[in-house]
Image 1: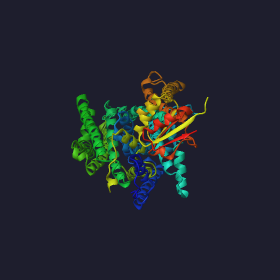
Image 2 (image 1 turned 45 degrees about the vertical axis):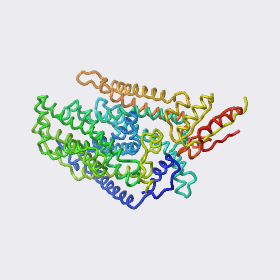
Image 3 (image 1 turned 135 degrees about the horizontal axis):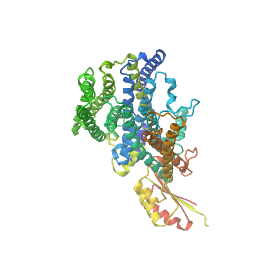
Length: 457
Length: 169
């Protein structure tokens, strides 16, 4: 928590002081947390090396379930990555003022989630050192990737999404980095001068002239305008990894909208889950308030209703199709060996979020935090249920089977959460986790302004 | 041409800046620069400079990506022909996905490059008129004018309650 700061002369100066003042401060709790995360990442790294050395047999995936926890994690993390650009781009285009305090953290989350998701296709590869075969490049074998394959679409979609999200996030940061640079001007000590230099380079020489702002605002608008359809396309493409196959339970036209809604749902839940601890740790309670959780709760509720509708529609279509294999797949999904994950999925994704109909619950930060954690759990299980139950129980009863993850898969899964949190915590300590510029814009436009709890105290 | 003078006023409220810039424009001043921690559409309109050229970059980048995406996929299908079931070599519907992603990628990158070129970024030397508090809570309005109108402009800027007004001759 930041120490007591001198009073600010204007509301704008107060915003800079509060948000930038929360940076760099590192206490024992933070170091301890980082140590735990690094240990888990190290363990997961060991598990991966073990798998590379002894082969994919060390993972639980085997015939007929060749996609297990790794692909579950891949889809889960790509889903988490969706809220960032949704909050930044779509809500920016819709001029929703409340996005300003959470968009930066959500965008950072997007980048780290894509970084995490991108690891899983590699972990899933038997011979990971050949992963570059996915990229189209001239080679001596005269071979090019099969552009009809959804897996290649995925490669293009995910790498585009990562690049555009990173650029969008960074361009949003530039004016804030300039603010930090100017705040650090004349800093003393080796560390202070080093910080001044680094933030100076990162701010690219931003001076806030009207010409710069004009070009910048235009570029930002275009980035937002192209990022919006990109968000929708990325998870559609991920869903086609499944829907393009004829496996019962996957081969369905509802998959793209169903996955996109699910992705936004899980992403919003992750924003809530992460923002509650970080607003507390950085002392930013005046900036992320009940008002923001109220709005996020509404978004959570809306997407939950869409996801719930998709669950029901899937069953209806399986029944209405009259296809015995399809119907059996769905019957087994709910009542077979994987009934437990199915029940968790429906409870956490459809029933629990209904609590958000209550305004009191939406504005109760502890309650919405618990709901969001449950939604994260539920969405992980949703991916698991879709992937594993369909593969385990397809057309031929002779080929049915069950899947159980091994310690290697579970370690790498735990490692992915640690990896994601590690980057997020590093980000929250070194870059402004709330957009200084956009909060000032909100104040100037009279849309919203920070609370006064800290000032009064 | 007579030597020019520069009047700079510093405000702490964007609405005062909008008012001041509007009055200056109504009075016929052309050479106005504004510095500040934020920008609003209203202020941009008041300054009244032509629209940003960044949009052309985005368009050209997007078209390049779209054409490039289709070109790469179609060309590589014919370069190493594998006829499966007598179907056409190029599968346009499948290639739309690749072309779409490349459109977005190229449009985004080129919009950003356009912004950097026209903003003269990255640079190690800041704008000569830059002050550290322009990225914090102050707005600067800088007018280049002829000596005979300096007094009127200074008075006009003062009427919007600036923190300070500076005249450079």
